[in-house]
Image (tube, rainbow, N blue to C red; front, top):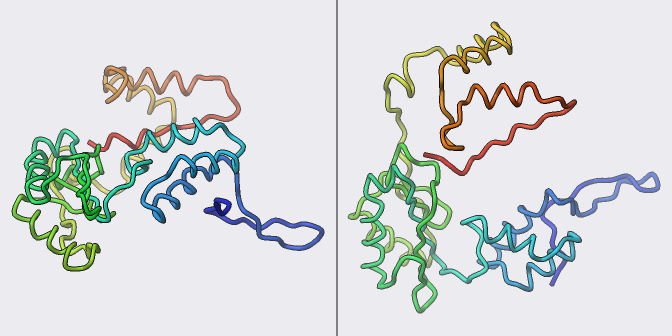
Length: 245
């Protein structure tokens, strides 16, 4: 197997600029994404070779591959339909979309057609909750999917030799309301936060009683204050971007 590399970097050696492969641990995911795109899956041999390249244990590579829904060690179909099953999409009818795909292709969710042309997958949130039910077809997002659209999408993939051209674009527009996209000046909240200062922001968040989405509804104000008061020269903010809804 050719040595894995997704990002090159320039270094200076003996006074000369040399381009080398950036094999820092941070490049593990981009390397896996590259192999997934090229081969359609990441085999055990691939994981073993990558582990050797990065000087880490193969189980660490496997843990990354098995964690992310868009990486797989199993060979998938040439066309992959990934239907979001997050709460908003479920409420909007994603189950019916999956059933329509199963009926048209003669397979169940999680399976691939015998000729290797199509795979159906149920996936976690894809960040299209405002246009649910939503799905991804060969990497292209489609919002407001209907049962009637399913047959047309499959037909287009067949017609274009396995290439979905993205005929069904995501819809533009905003839903207005008291919370989302209300009539508020852009960045007004950020400017106010800078104006009143860190301590006042923490106090307002604490006094509001806002609960966190995760951690069993742990109070946001308490969490932020704990982070702010932690004694460290350098601090990190970790954002869980997996929970789109």
